[in-house]
Length: 300
Image (cartoon, rainbow, N blue to C red; front, side):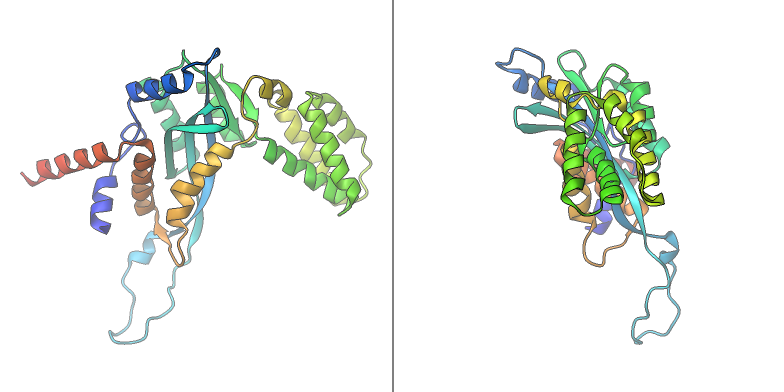
């Protein structure tokens, strides 16, 4: 099974495991049926920490056979499996369209988005596009370049995290801290991000920790002030949180790779992640068909 998995997963790209444009159009049409406005196609981008081991761990260990196993001399590392997910909103239900998760860097994630954009496998006309992410600068850089017309939403959970840090540092663990966070989130929901920024400027920090938290929160909200119109977004049927990609991270990455005692070589983890993406995208059968054809060609 180990050999078969690596053979089938070798060389797979985001387009190899993605459903066809026709299949995407079919799913969009099913969600659009009976509705007066176009459905929302959501792109979520986020990372999931997975346990990896270095390639040096492949080296044979010294010692005689029959002796008790020695503790491994290599150290594992938690790496970021960057993922993207396209999904449709059907009322309270999320309809999966495609996912792609790999342990790789920012440039490779941007290249995967470019491939999807260039291949035209995602219909644009019959949907309203939306991107929901946290405040990662690299994420919004690619989004702005590839999907400039999509609605951009700052995940409200990550936004609330910054506010809670300010409240904890300034007010401590008190009812006043919770009241301040709730009042501030309400102002953001109503589109009053300028009022929130002004309030942060006027707050008198009681400690260096509070001053730092306020400065970080101000920079964060100011950077994403055009992505926090939550009331307007909610009225338009757009999501306010990144629950879709978080669910994908859990089902595709965490459930399989975060096993007790499991530490993955990066290349093997990417093979398995590609196959799991194919499973959830509905393309696993065609991936194995291509793998069998490739093996027959190499054996001839």
